[in-house]
Amino acid sequence: MRTATVNRTTKETRIKLTLSIDGTGASQVATGIGFLDHMLESFARHGAFDITLSAEGDLEVDQHHLVEDVGIALGKAFDAALDDRRGINRTGYFVFPMDESLAVVAVDISGRPTLQYDAPFTRRYIGELDADLLYDLFKGFADNLRATVAVRAIQGRNDHHKAEAIFKAFGKAMRMACSHDSRMIEDIPSTKGVIE
Image 1 (tube, rainbow, N blue to C red):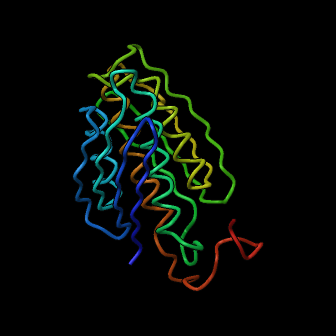
Image 2: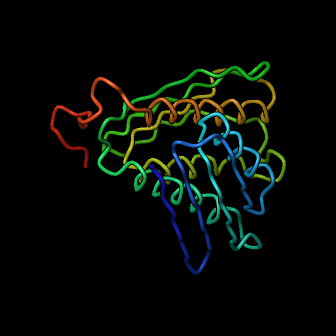
Image 3: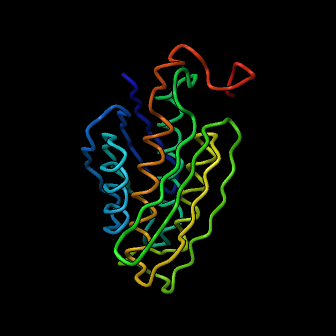
């Protein structure tokens, strides 16, 4: 079973996250930022990942520390649960329509952390979430999973719909990347024979 638990405590945040990659999409998420909870629940549902996440932080200062650290913890959890990456597809991508919005996310669990992010929002806040911090969440995730992640909001009028399309595409892309390739189940998906 591909599972992991991450406990991350700093002077700014306290996070506990449990992950089962081979789940059913069940989630319990409590970050203190309602819209972020909604997005992470959408990610879990569309990725079929089981996620339990409790996060507390210095929200009286700013949301930055908490949102970034949630991305870090999520990346660390996937990194641990995937171990040496043996038998996985490694890459995944999905184009997700959400009403008038369209987003694409592509992932390569390559050992080379990179984020390409192009998701302009028209408002600073979506619900109570500072939309600018979604970059930091995905950057923390990519760096700690050691993956290339490309996120793009292709079109959309409603910022809620654009963000939701991104997170649903993210879940689907990660589900594809983490899925087993039955023809190469014992192999590490790299010509180098290792993903570091």
